[in-house]
Image 1 (spheres, helix red, strand yellow):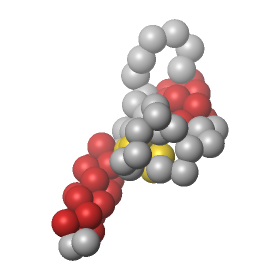
Image 2 (cartoon, rainbow, N blue to C red; image 1 turned 180 degrees about the vertical axis):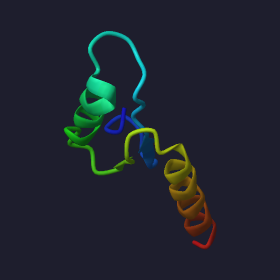
Image 3 (tube, one colour; image 1 turned 45 degrees about the vertical axis):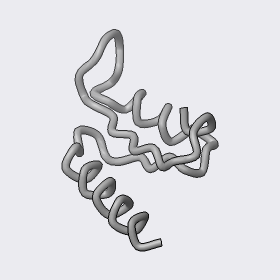
Image 4 (cartoon, rainbow, N blue to C red; image 1 turned 135 degrees about the vertical axis):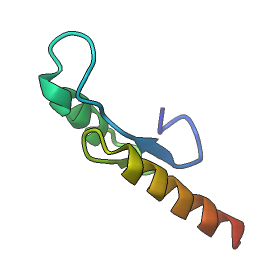
Length: 64
């Protein structure tokens, strides 16, 4: 998804899901493995950090 859009993408892996997800590790590794430069990957279950990063990005976008 990060390679298809021109805006920042905030990726937050969760520890719950379907199949063998190893408590979020497989989702985290899939997000980190992305080659897109606009993907910011947070820690597992760190929704607060993702929201905080999104707020910082939106604040800096408004200053331009």
